[in-house]
Image (cartoon, rainbow, N blue to C red):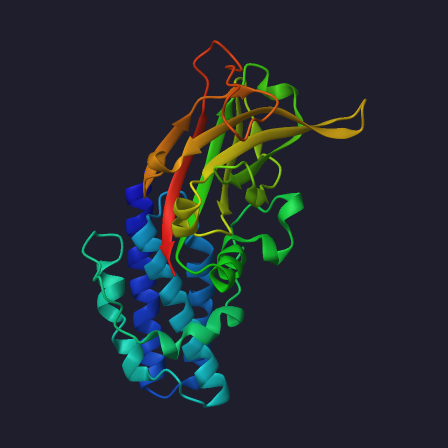
Length: 293
């Protein structure tokens, strides 16, 4: 299913890019600008899809920036990135999602790095959660924010689902991701949006969280990563932690699923008091991708 969707995207983007290239080569400035801007928006929106690998994310990110930069160049007539540079992207689109993508991107980063603010992810055909309408909550904007502040390898978790026997009972459930060093000092804390669905024995998230501390810094501090499942208690009018999980950095693998056991509250950042939350085979399911910065 995922491969089929990837192939559809590749073929569609190749067609659109060829059209934009023709307009650009023929001097049809307005048409080329619109084509490039539209493609940049589409690609920015798709880079956070569940089946996109770390390498593919990096390529899509660079493609969106190049397209946005070229649209800006045509608009202002300041050619930081040229039509010749854009022609170099043709082999990238042809190889996209095939596993044969080149290791070196053909356009120098100095020609497109400035374009992040010019790309606005398309929401056409997308389902937008009520608490995620602010454009800064999109995967694209979260990625740009973390790339501005983190030096080194950025870790992104896609939190898929957590297994709970009473999954349908929770109000406004969300996850908090914590990074704590060997002395239990918190280095980073990130909240997801509310869960998108509650099933019989699973709360579904399918949301991405970018850590604001690099993998290298986590390794230097002997850190571990914690995941707290939280929900709202109307009678007490407060947010409560129901259960938690943790993972050591040795368990963190690029482009691999991680399945974690769930422990009963309270969260123990020293990892000494570990009591399983349920005897049933229910777990937290994650998928990690890395971004080199």
